[in-house]
Image 1 (cartoon, rainbow, N blue to C red):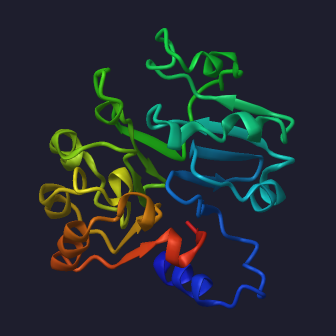
Image 2 (tube, rainbow, N blue to C red; image 1 turned 90 degrees about the horizontal axis):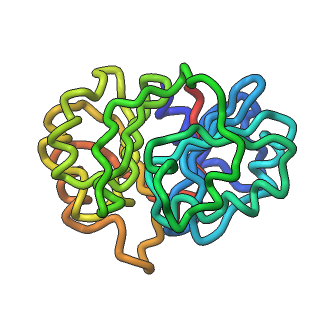
Length: 236
């Protein structure tokens, strides 16, 4: 039902308004990653980066809510819109992670107010040891027991967490935007995804990779790409 809703909204002409009850969006940011879970009093943003940002659409739903950020890792295309977004909202906080506590060139992240408590709608299923390789340090999240977001977590890390993915998860946001380094056969064997989404712009790095597209076809998982479909709306 969730997937049917998403596909129907994507097929509507752009002049038609989207239903007001969608509560999860994977934004079309070009090559990058920004997804938002919209709840009664808050907007939870999982990563906040990309080549561009649809600020007007996001602010329409989130300007008067508390805005909270969860990060998968510190690659620029996952965090580079935080500063400009902060200027447009009254409240913005960041859930603290171990990598933010390190002495890092991203020192400005430490200046953002830390969010208190935890977020019950999102579960962490893998928090890797810190590595010089930012991708290997990606934290893996499950949203509302339905959507898997793994940042740029590579296949070597997928082996460690693929069995932890809840059986209820039906939507996969491709790791590393669909790069050949992620979305291993092991991950696809361990889970039963009904849909895969690539947050990417093909002309930048060729994501999603053709071998990943072929692998998804082999496992009968349909794929949609933000560059071609635009913002992808779900009701969870």
